[in-house]
Image (cartoon, rainbow, N blue to C red):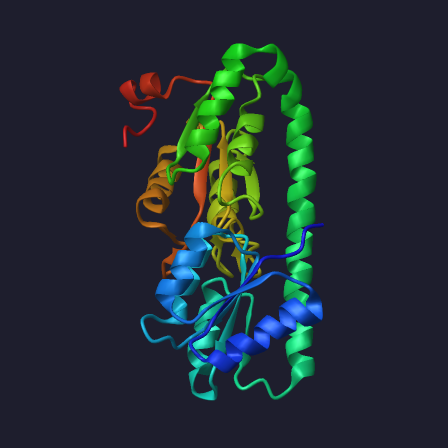
Length: 301
């Protein structure tokens, strides 16, 4: 298992010096220190990090902004927010945006710091192990294809390029041609790899079940709904959702999917307030959606 790459972002020189000693000398981990947002962004462009310690208050930006940028460019990077006692509310908000946790400055309790960093590093190790295992599976699944079939080589090379772009992708092909494998390949080569990949077959569920599966539901939304259910658009946040047989989705489901694609917002069934999500959607069909749109069976937008 490779050692985690660590970035500390804090304008206080003593904090940077402390973490350089703590990580490099005590733990044996590589660490970089940035004392401003500009310096941090330069480092983030040059290399990827597994753990970032980010101060909320910086001279040229704020930790919330940097948190969003780090999670956008490196979703698998764990972020710990460092905060003064007067900014706990902001730190809690940061956790809602994807921070692993927060810790108060000054670091009066080194045991608390040790425990928090141990948890973060364990999470990083688990992600690295997951990524390694998934890549080994994908390498095995695609090795024969890459060796024996030039057209599929071209498809995979194109898929690698598409994987890095912030776009939804439609995969067309007959049943049994490996559309789900191609979707996993795209996810594995995207910045979202290491975050959830969830597959839903739109043709295998009734409209009401599919709606509840995708968007979740509130307590009492319908008979038998005894509690809140978190839908896949919540569970797959920061990851990828693969909608197989998208051509089977009803017009009502299509409208709700369009809202998510356009605004990143959705409502749980029975919900009254919109929820935000950051999910990349990959879809597949064994039908011609152009023909379905022409026949008014599928929305053109």
